[in-house]
Length: 398
Image (cartoon, rainbow, N blue to C red; front, side, top):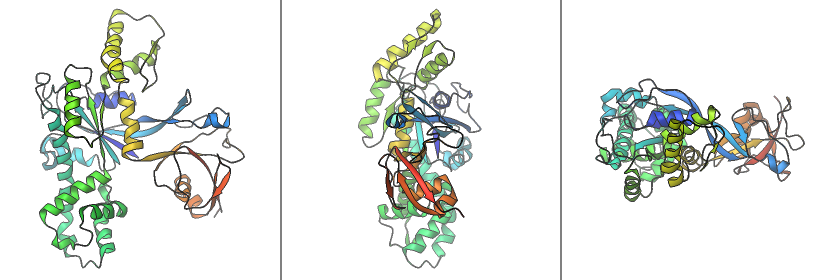
């Protein structure tokens, strides 16, 4: 599962990415600092189940601290998008193509209003960040429409026999942007186009389908960035008032990056997402000033830097994923002695057999039964899993 980090140039997108992944990337206050996409690993938080079994876990991927499991997710930071990106402006087509594999998007918005639509510096508060939300979603919708139009001549002429054939044809044409059959069928249902022949769609209906497909296949979470700058709080309220149904989270990539760097060098103890940090060493005047600013302008005001909350809500709320722990009913450790070594992220409607396939194709094909390790009960292949379940798969080896 991949999270795409998007936004206009100079919105603080690369700073957000660096804060989430601790990967050094080009950060500067001018457009197109990022050209090639940056890829890195961030983490989402899951309450670990080890204490329920009175053991200490040993994660193979990510880490666990104070009972919180930090599960890795992949982030891709693409170059800033400008109005007209779907037409190739600012190399927009290439940058949009970098998002094909993303399951969900984090739109980093300059909440301070200190950069215009092209990412150029302007007086703080002089640009309306609501316009950035509108333009970026429009650009991605038009990108989807362009892909639909590119395949339309062939699709519209196909002698489709019923809705199943319509779904299959559209899914094949749109597979490169996450248009699987289930997603396409859901979108057709939402738009009321499920019974209509493709050759009879109007231009407005194609645009509506493109928009709904994007909303279904690539939901967007808004990271209202630069909350450490004056005027951002007022703009946050303006965005929430104009877009009440969107997930808009206040954050400061600058603050999170400063805290993580200080923690990495041993000056403070800080856990991502926490409202406080603890000083471990004497700080010089510059460091003291920086961390005091973060504490006053961000942590005290918003309860955290927001970066961790963005990642958590993107995966667990926008995507609706759940975390499942592979475990044995009699033994919680793997062959190397690692206790509860893995925690896997799965779609919210996953079954026991889906989980078996996630672990290994042979386990899915040879599925016999699963065991709910917490309840010590057997469940069948269609059993729906719940967040933080511990599951053992019993299967027939090929």
